Amino acid sequence: MKLNCDMGESYGAWVMGNDAAVMPCIDMASIACGFHASDPVTMQQTVAMARKHGVSIGAHPGYPDLLGFGRRKFDCTTEELRAWLAYQIGALQGICRQQRTYVDYVKPHGALYNTMMRDMDVLRTVMLAVKEAAPGSALVVMAIPSRCVIEGMAEDIGIELMYEAFSDRAYDDAGYLVDRKVEGAVHGSADAIIRQVQQIVENGTVTTLSGKTLAVKADTLCIHGDGPHATAVASALHHWRKKDKL
Image 1 (cartoon, rainbow, N blue to C red):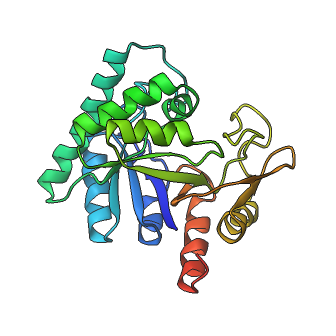
Image 2: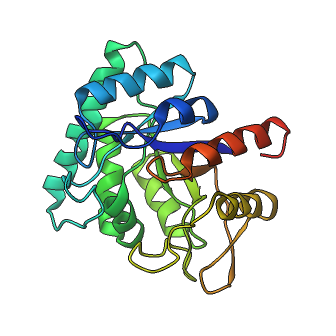
Image 3: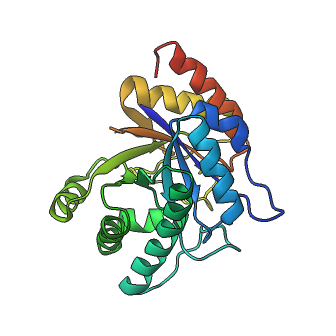
């Protein structure tokens, strides 16, 4: 199972995460594209770092929300959302071309990601935008228990999907992420995160915030680069995987 991490989320003089320490431990770098975080120089440096370590590069577009770090939902038209996505993906593609590499996948960020997983009209718009702006790139979506509608839509549009589970976030009983405003929504220790990863990998399940067990079938595991335990968790999982456990 591949490890992915949200990266390149520094902006100007504001530093977020420890990308240099995390990058050698992961397979996929989801790079912010300037709307919720990042700037051109940060994007350029993060692409170079990913290329150096042989890490797959993904666009990590979000709502135009630097102040809220992309975690606030925006009401927008279909035309606006498709334009926002094309703009961000295109920016990262340009930087990738400059360094003789490419965008391999797209993973929407924050509120946009959560919205598309609950609103099929938004998800369709995202799928169409990704197909238009990054032909051949996969779209990362959440590995929820009921996903037949998502798979049917992707087949109709002609886009590849990658299913994602989360190492550091609590799940609700429907298989979605618990809202960050709820206590316990983010796991507070590296041990708790690693236990959840072990459960996902070894049992194919997660335990929800209420204690229910849900099946989760995923292609990739997310580590949030802005989390306080990102470096420790990435390192631990990297060494664990070397022992053929992941």
